[in-house]
Amino acid sequence: MRSSTSRHLHSSVTYGLSALLDLPQVETTVDELMSAPLSVPCGVSPVDAITLMREHRVRHLFVVDAMGEYLGIVHLEGVVRAARRHEPIRTAIVENAAVVRPHTSAQTAAEYMLRTRTPALPVLDAAGNLRGIVTEADFVRWYARLAAEQAKRSTHEPYETRDEELPSGARITIVAPR
Image (cartoon, rainbow, N blue to C red):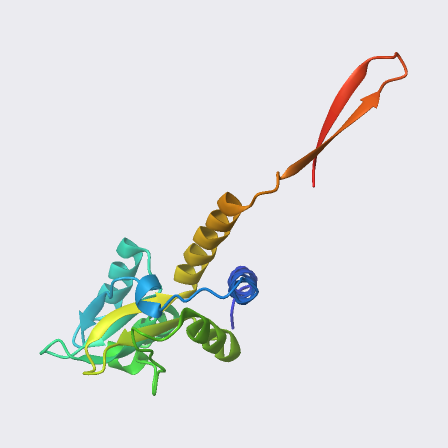
């Protein structure tokens, strides 16, 4: 069960992803948003994986085989569960995890993540090589950048002014947000 803080954070991020879908169409692809992949070998202990996640401040890791080939993705909750049960990290791998290709549109990825409540998607190229990860945080950063760019392009002032006369007869200009 998620804590109330976790539920609130997920709700906030979900709202942020929803807001992205209301922006004007921007042709952005997943490879423009994704973060660098952080992976661990399948033999790593869940405790070591948690330590790595804390050090890098991430909630998702990729598990790779001895050749560095992608085996799957693990989320913090699953790794913690594996650690408590003294199970190998392999038991925390998300089965049949959805992945996206680098050329997938950001909007498609965001819509899928919202619909399925998926917090992150691995980005694999056509040969199955791990290229990165796109997370809720990547979308929040993208949204913030787009909103800032849109504000810079805006031709209207973010405030309005109006002249008034006070009872004393002094003339003032009121500055207020639009």
